[in-house]
Image 1 (cartoon, rainbow, N blue to C red):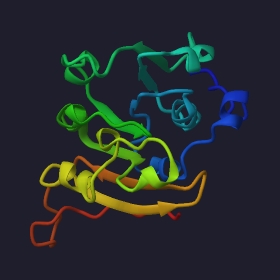
Image 2 (cartoon, rainbow, N blue to C red):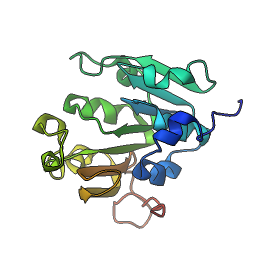
Image 3 (cartoon, rainbow, N blue to C red):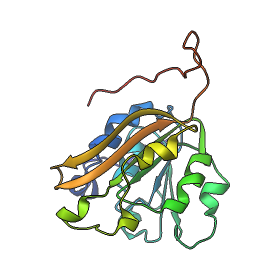
Length: 202
């Protein structure tokens, strides 16, 4: 595999990866394919590509990642995630990780969980109720309720980390974040609980 684009590219320099995504990226199985849903400018595509993961970027507008067209290890899929129909990318394939940031379309939650490989990692981060005091998004349709991502993962994924609250950087906002693994197999001597994952340093 040829060398991936440097994360010092102009796109990456303007749009660094989310610290939450970067922190939990090491939990993704080595060499596994990572789906960046609603990939925008591709900051997380570039981050995982630099970590030697094949990546798939999906969005209805791929202009932000046009410079990655034809790059080895990169697949770009133009798709309307909110068309009201099953998204073939999620129904026909499985991924070692699915990354979603600053995007919310609740009907996709079940398909996201189904599209994780065994041991696959869901890294999700977006705005939550209360964000309207800081600006957009302000509609409840685009804001997570308290504990909503925990409810999505409950009985399906092992939650590694979860946060909900006000942040000051990169701008003032109310954010909710989760990292969870598709593995609830009982660990040895853990009374039916799954084997804990290592917590990467913040």
